[in-house]
Length: 334
Image (tube, rainbow, N blue to C red; front, side, top):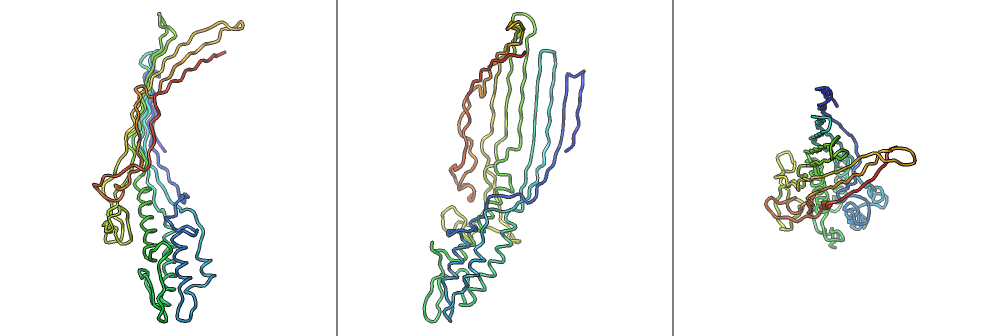
């Protein structure tokens, strides 16, 4: 990071402007896209199909050792990330009694490379799966195969073909990677402003009044993934995704959540008191957060819009704004 600091007018104006850039590599993310180990994972379902299907000699398409070795156990993936931004902080004291503080920050976070390790593993798995199917002349999208005049099912326990099983996982990888790459949940702009005036003489001597504003721009909620919804189920099925000439997913508009705009207030009184032969400072303070009791929900995910541009979705993830709150404190400074 780097920046500049300015101190002007005998301390009445102090400002710091800084920019920063950070990178992270091989950051662990709890995402498997459905390929993790377990009886319900897509990989295990495919291996079950291959183990339960026999060739012309009556042998299973894969051995028990191959089944055990290919039924890997993992619970996440690795990802790289990069964050860039800048911050501005200004503290002004126009008079000895009056203080103003202003802070602004802008950041952009990009995460990439998610599932690169799983994609490499999947390429190898596909070769293994196809080699096994070649023993009976079957393909990934076949629902059954006839061997020695007997039809054998190539569907999983939930009725899907091998193509459907790994295809749904690939769709999951694109969807989850999209969330990470476009900055899901990020709020690019943040502003905090606070001012306080302290009375040092007259009838209001010892009193302080202050107030401030907290603002954050709308959060990044969803990015539309373009696809042909052939099944009309608002979900991406294998073969439905819109790809460019290089095989990359195509994206549409970005949906945003709700901005945060809150006003706070504080009132304080300070005076000296006599206590145990001493004169400590007594401070009484009242803080009010969210003065105008702005409420409601802050949506973070909107299903349907994830996949279809122009389709009204519904919120599946959201948080609530904390209601107006009061905090009363009393302190003694010896």
